[in-house]
Amino acid sequence: MYLRPETNGIEVESVMMRTIQSSSFYREKVQLVYLANLPGSFIGKKRAIEKHYHLKIMFAKRGGKLFTAYMKHQFSEFFGIPFEKASIWGAFEALRHMGYSRTGLFNIWVPHNELLSLNGQTIKRVGDQFIVNYDIPAILMKNRDDTDMAVMILRTDLGPESIYQLMMNMVDSLKNQGLLSDGEAFTRVFHFSRSPFEQILDGIGFIYNQDGNHIDLNSINFYTYLLERGISPGEIEKILKYPIFCFQDPENGYYEKTIYTATYGMGYDEAYKKLILSEGQVLLA
Image (cartoon, rainbow, N blue to C red; front, side, top):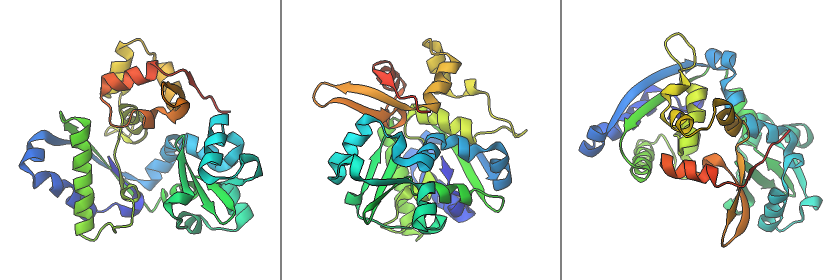
């Protein structure tokens, strides 16, 4: 779990930890085993944000040019306009062609029916234009020398549903303290790993030892779980670099999702089975 740079501070961190300590159930079941503050200069040197958001940055640069056939179809179905007739810009393209600043682009509000999440990418309709990953330019700007990021690891034997409920309790606590508004997405304040594959991605990106080096990947439980089932380190790296996978559903047919979204809320066994039952992987260049 990590706090976004613009919200990092002892107040937010304290409220979130009090949510655990104020509950006898969570106090017994959840342990804080890692806490670090990563300075913006360190994050920049490691290029942690660029690596973490590799796929989203690709789409923010190239927009609709990277859409798969499935994405084009889903886009047209959702927005009611043929993909070929739509003006679709990556966020960086929108900065140049539409005249927005990074902050201005980040703060554009639209109704939910003008916002589509697809294959891990966010597509926002602004007037008669469409912007892919509007938030990426601002996120890259916020992680600079004058910012920092708090990173935590919580150890627990709770199942995914109980962990999610704990996170939502933290959201309620932040709202009660006026640190998060009712209409504001909690993801603008903090992030938590919502799937086993996301645990690996977050661990690689934001967990370091006292010497400032990446932790041993074998200390990430799901990473060793995959190794034990015959998936090589190179294959795991490829999964994280190109996380869009193809699936077949008996009722709805073919669909695509990132392996992170496809395994939200799953345990290790279920997430592994989801991976091996996939019918393909989208390799973007």
